[in-house]
Image 1 (spheres, rainbow, N blue to C red):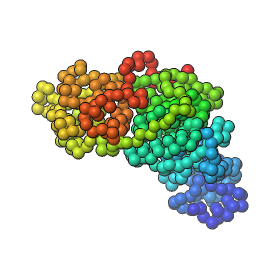
Image 2 (cartoon, rainbow, N blue to C red):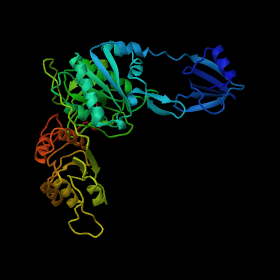
Image 3 (cartoon, one colour):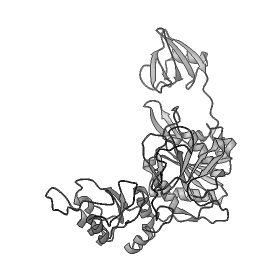
Image 4 (cartoon, one colour):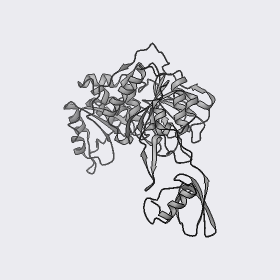
Length: 445
């Protein structure tokens, strides 16, 4: 809170929090956005400079001028009352975030309608319906949230939506995309997850292009898959649609962080040009197709990243789980110590004990790209003979984990689990590896 003197001055000059002002002090002029004063001396005026940094200047002997009033956002409730072709479901995340001025930290907004209301272009793309399902940081998402979200998406489709957009945090978006891919089968329309790497207060935010492209594609694109819509390049050229079971986040801040793994993106999209280019095969829209909602899932599943020096007791501690995904090295390996080195540990017998107890053990690879092959080295052959599932699979660790949760929701007999895990349900497995360039650099089409 500012001092009474400053508050009176602001009222007289019609200056409010969020307005752009200039402060002349000691022969220098500073321009920026007026920020609240949340701590410290109340005679200091705080502004956010264009470079994103905050500075505080003593009000005494300063000349403060209003440069531009802050733009008023559309009322959230008007957006949420709208009924339209595209249903937008909010789950939190950076794409629907606000800045906490005291610390500069990013927090979810109260409702995604607050964010959607800031994009007037939405009204020219599609009529929309906006609902908040969760207000969560994506790292707090659980299997129960996946089930609730699948229910909500299915409800919007049954109510006649031409497409559904899910606003989601990027950190665990790949998990949720995979979960919806398995739970929502026989889709008649697209279900697109969208997020943002950079918050809306930053000039380099990617939220607008991602959101508008996802809404445009949800309404207009001839596709009926669960997919992730995110920047294809570091600039604002276009977005890719990545299949929900093939996508992974590869960078913690770059705008083109999401890539399709062991597969090409499904399509490229740019709403500004009404541009949609098919890149790989996908299911097309069919309003006669009947959605199948299958949300049976088992959350008693663990994932362990194999690492040098991993202790056998760590594997033993997993005995109470119904399933375990081992993220192994290379082609799908774990320490087996075949040369009986005194400083090495073998965890093979511990893994075999898990399987003998009825725990489903699945292999994924830390390399992410490539295919599990347990037939090349003795380590892999031992694991395969012991009953580890995954030989020949080219899934990502995230998809392997989600699929095991989903399969164990239907079956616990190990032979049946193996059969279901190695069956392709949602494009998570392929018979042939992609040899051509995988768009890793997001080149122009």
